[in-house]
Length: 127
Image 1 (cartoon, rainbow, N blue to C red):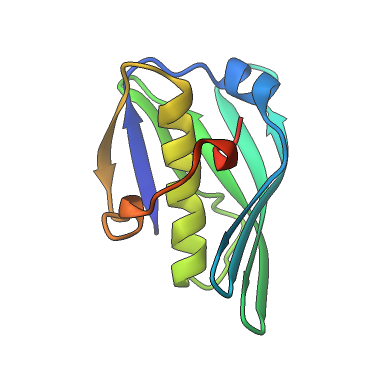
Image 2 (image 1 turned 90 degrees about the vertical axis):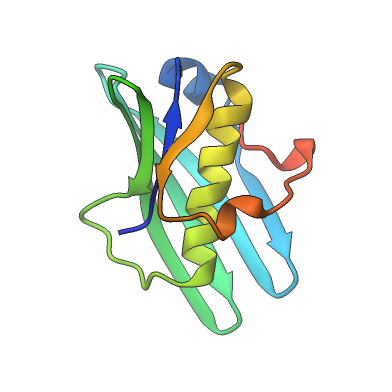
């Protein structure tokens, strides 16, 4: 299951308050983060995502959950998109956006090393 940990102090309530729908285009690949839903306890955040890769269109939820060391970005367990390059890039984009919104954080455990090298202009960061 694709995932990426953001280590350090992260504030999901603040990330949710600053969230605005965004689209990231990379050639024929389109990644969208359309909606954000914060849990009542503020310990998890759902992001409604859409990835378009050629003819393949996949809608799914990414989830960010608070942990002792920081936060984990992964696919919601009840969604099961095909784990394509676009889906993995979308999760990496979310992790990089969370890290950019929380100074002093770093990336930890992940199986998205190849996707984390993408350059994302400031205007395309999620919050």
